[in-house]
Length: 47
Image (tube, rainbow, N blue to C red):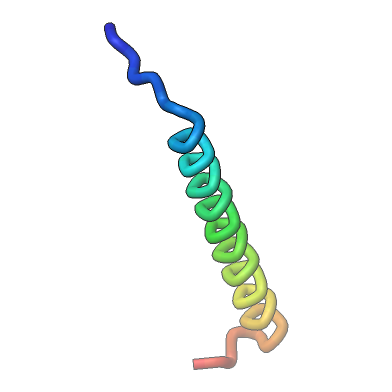
């Protein structure tokens, strides 16, 4: 099995994309949590 060697620029770029993806996923989790709290707080009366 042969592995690809990444240079420093590629490693930095990959790390940046991974951080951006983590931030987006975290924001989605927070958004779903807030929406759920709002729906539960209003007894699900929002249509």
